[in-house]
Length: 378
Ligand SMILES: C[S@@+](CC[C@H](N)C(=O)[O-])C[C@H]1O[C@@H](n2cnc3c(N)ncnc32)[C@H](O)[C@@H]1O
Image 1 (tube, helix red, strand yellow):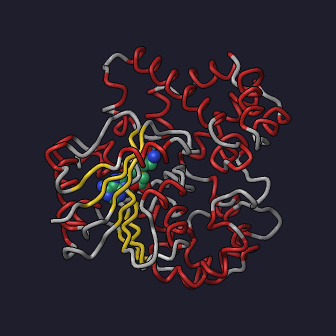
Image 2: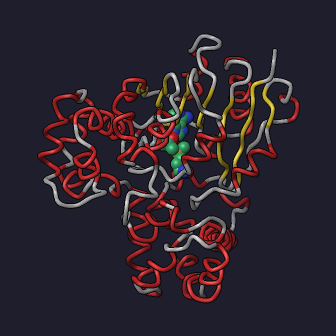
Image 3: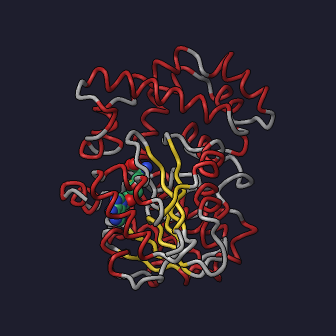
């Protein structure tokens, strides 16, 4: 990985306080289940917890960014030491309890790293961590300064209320996806803004395949509107927690949120969190350091987006050689197409039909493609 990107992720800003990658694609794409030794990008931990609920043997949650690991650790220890009501209040998903008092209950069980990180973030803890990362703040500014200027609270609620896809599509086409929305997306989701406020300009260096900023912005605007249209029309909006989080910055009920937040799964989750191991390392180096066969599944987020082709190829090879036969890796592409090169297919083979079918159900905003690759018999 280029040194500048590695430094960027290791800097320690909390970039994500929730994971904006559809957990169902991770779990189904990996066919996660008992016996699996899973390596997962930690990020904000949501998909690590989703994987646990599939009863996997263990999850190694890895991240270059120690802040991300501190948030994941806080969640793990909170699940162990708080009730479900307290847990969702601590995260900011429900209102009414004193979050600092809840944090004090979890604090003695944290490592020094996580404790130190949390202790200096009283403001974020009071507000609730689930919407406190850099990306969440970036979305909030769009919501308040853009979306809410063109749509009333009632229109936003209506957009989020559908089970019937035909009625949902009609509402998007007739009301929600209007010229105003197009304009607000184009004005906000620009290279400069995404680079400067949401992601980081060093993450944008491969974006959109042109050096011309105006052209890049036109492509970005078209891409994001199209993607927005898809997530607003392709799957029932009432069950899309990612869309709800983006459009409102909250969850109305816990009925359709990620499985790890469901009250009914909490007792099970409490019994599983000890299966998570937190690792603050670069993922490629970590895999190389593991004995052959120690791992068989990996959730790689959009990791390859930041890597040049030679580094990607070397990583695909490492997975093909080190993971157990039949093991799987999943990942997304954003603007940079990345896939296993053909000459490595005998080692690790793309499962394109399956990945495409799952991508059609992707409920999250960003990504342009989803990949599943399977380790071949050696
Ligand atoms: C890959 S990023 C992607 C999130 C978001 N979709 C985006 O594109 O901005 C998610 C997490 O991966 C971590 N990360 C990125 N590259 C890594 C690597 N090579 N090893 C370990 N963690 C890495 C980052 O620190 C971050 O917390």
